[in-house]
Amino acid sequence: MTGGGSSAQLNFRLKSRLIRSCNQTKESGHLSRLGAKSKHRQRRCSEHADHACVLRMPSLRRWAPCAVVSIPYSGPSCRDLRVPAIREEIEMTDGPKKFRALLAKGGLIVAPGVYDGYSARLVEKAGYEMAATTGAGISNSLLGIDDIGVMGLSENVNHCRMLARTLSIPLTADADTGYGNPMNVHYTVQMFEEAGLAGINIEDQVHPKRCGHMPGKEVIPLVEGVKKIEAACLARRDDAFAIIARTDALAIEGVDGMLQRARAYAEAGADMIFADAIRTEDQIKRLVDAARVPVTVNMGFGIRVRPTTPLMSIKRLAEIGVRRVTLPRMLPAAAIHGMTRALEVMKEAIASGEPADRPDIVVDIDAILRLMDYDGMRELERRLLTTGAIETKYGLAGETSQAAR
Image (cartoon, rainbow, N blue to C red):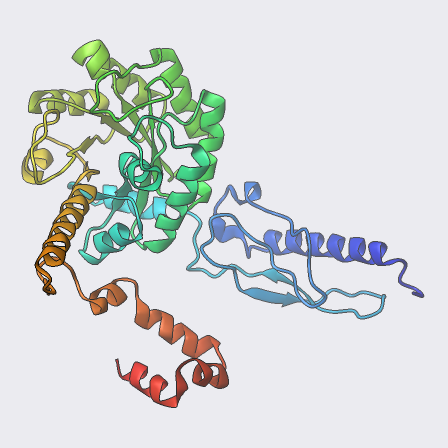
């Protein structure tokens, strides 16, 4: 190779020029839409093809489109390298900003608990403005075990990432104890933020934790709980990302302990306070008065009583100043009820020897396809695949028939 050096030197020069071009693009404002803290989010591309290079930004739900930047190069096969021009509508902080906007509107936000793609899509389809993951629901459905702190950080983050990309409404996650001490909390916050969540719960139980409505809970010292909230606030790249401080102190330290922790966590920077397994309306009122930041309440099943937190109307909760209500057990419990009934009917059909057609128990295939946006997938195929590929997949008759649907 003459005038160009070795292949390794060529790659080094191309990579160096790509990095300089990325920095110039950032300085000119193309990446400024990601916010004042975008310098923390810049990532260098580690490998590239002859004709293109794409810089991957964390938490983006799709690859950013590329803007061509010509780079003079004296060596052979000089090509254009590409760096991303981030589309205005792609916002790393989209979920957090939407959550903040909902809070700014005033009133009470209802966030059903979601744990899989079906539940997430159903919540948005039903018109709810927000959702929250249920840690118990994910642990139960993903691992098949109770919510006793066995589910790890990676399992939780990866599952929540898939749920967040399914939704256009904001989604908060249950991050348990932050998976360790304040140092662990630091990285836990960043991982959930990069996964596209609007915020997370961090609780003050001793790790391994358990469902807040189970006996046998323990809490960490107040000073350690405060340090965890401080660590969480320091770790977030976008101040809009919500840090929701959960305390389980009521069962161990009583009402005064719960209120003391609520005040301390709010002072440490928490955006919202969540006292789990709160037992009376009066305790909720006292928490709202003490917290000095918005309060969120876990209403569990939402439409069925339970032994711990009393079943209250959304109207009454709004009247006493609650800003958000989560319903973590409602959809998992409804799914269990529906699946149990379908299995019973199937057993009855097996015993009778007669088929059972029960549209009152199961939806049809069209309902599932609509929920999963089958038509959107087909439209994407029509845009991205060649005519020949479409005809090979479906045939002319099949394509016409599918288009008519």
